Image (cartoon, rainbow, N blue to C red; front, side):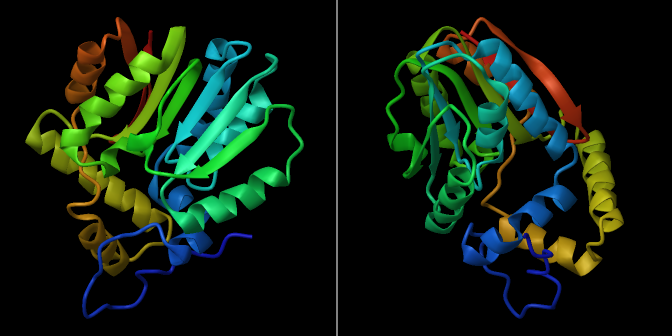
Length: 242
């Protein structure tokens, strides 16, 4: 059972850079539920989109899979035969827990859980790729190349689902939505100190883009169809189809 996220509940002399370590793994489901508006809906939606886009005899990639929530949603949703999910994360602690969780289910679609840098993955015979709040943690100069590689490895008709925290297009709107998001966290039990300390930990680690920047990457990679299928405050999930 997930523990309550109290990582930043006490004042810290120095706030370390945020890492997906064992401490975060222990509280991750609670952290996500209380921090990311609409997360449960996004996970369910990924399963529903997988029903539409996963092709028989193909591969599915869950990149930055963390504990494998999207992987589980896909395994539960799809019925097409002879597929395999590649669940990839560079956090050893996350991968160990993900492997334990996935092995507890007996869905037909098998999962290969890998500890790896997603930039090193070679995509082939892919019909569905998920980047669920992952791209925002990559340096900006690596993002286009990853989208290009995904596009190249996708089968025709395959889809990329990209969930991200967004920067809004106008600064005043952006700040107001950030304030509303902080209120969302407070309503979920986080104190002002917790919010401030976590924000400091994520500074220069989680670097959001605008929706237009994401769309431009899709276009540059070669995708001809892309849109936003879900948004709650400044958290959105996009889809691009080859």
